[in-house]
Amino acid sequence: MRTDGVALQGLTYPPPAAAGTSSATRYAGPPPRASHPLGTAKPLEPPPQRRCAADRSLTTRLLVLHGPLLDHLGTREPALYGHLTLAVLNARIAAQADALGVGVDCVHCPTEDALVAGIVAAPTHADALILNPGPLTHTSVAVRDAVALLLMPVIEVHLTNIAAREPFRHYSVVAPIVAGTIAGLGPAGYEAAVVAAVRLLAERAEGRT
Image 1 (cartoon, rainbow, N blue to C red):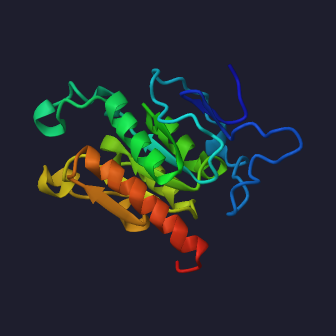
Image 2: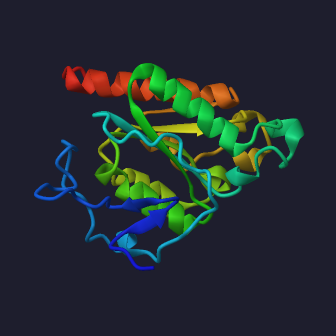
């Protein structure tokens, strides 16, 4: 399988354009960065059931990127992360987006390469990004630099309170360059991020930010 972008859970970045239209017509920000070398990474095929919602007719769309190991929710250290699976978490995110009348897609990125490629391609697919880099939060300069490319709102989310955990987890490489960070609220943090992203986009549309 070969594409011009990165295939993640049935989503191709950049998404194919409809006949006679540009794939970036909806996005009012800068032109897509398809020529960026990170945008031509080898296509990756994560496990199924990572899509939150399939209604692509909605004008405002959000993208949720889950970093490595988030697919092990439910079995990974349940004392910390609980027994909620990624599929159930995605369903809660979708329900919150539906309640606000916006579209959302959730993609699990099992490697650093996949996460970087998904971040770089986000503007061709969505209006705002909700990001949990997982363990790459604390170490990945590549993830940090990919986020720095974006002009869209980016909200960082963590299920646990990373500031209350081991010292090496206290620092996030993306925290200084995102719109905000939500940590320690469990799945409700993702739902809060959806609300915050919609509000940030509305404020931008009104010229308040």
